[in-house]
Length: 122
Image (cartoon, rainbow, N blue to C red; front, top):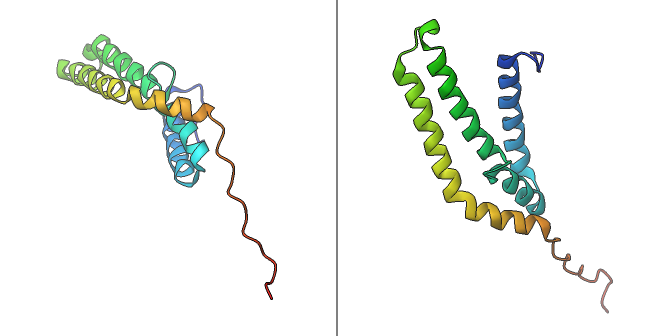
């Protein structure tokens, strides 16, 4: 991280970087680890997707509150509000899958198949 986490812009950059790292780790994750990651990402209450909705919604309110100071057009806060609504709708659509991933994440992985015999046959 190049910015201290207490600076909001630096924090946003750090979170973006963490999402990139999570994406890379997901690509290489075992099936069980991938299921756990997906369950957390798709969780509409406490997961990444749910928190993204909250961030976009807050961004819309902040843009509206500070529009005059930053000379932002009203459509900026409206666009952020629409984005929050769309991501929320997507989160609701994916919620059934999130529940399935959460169930799978709590299920122990199946046992590995037995290894084939390695001895020589005569």
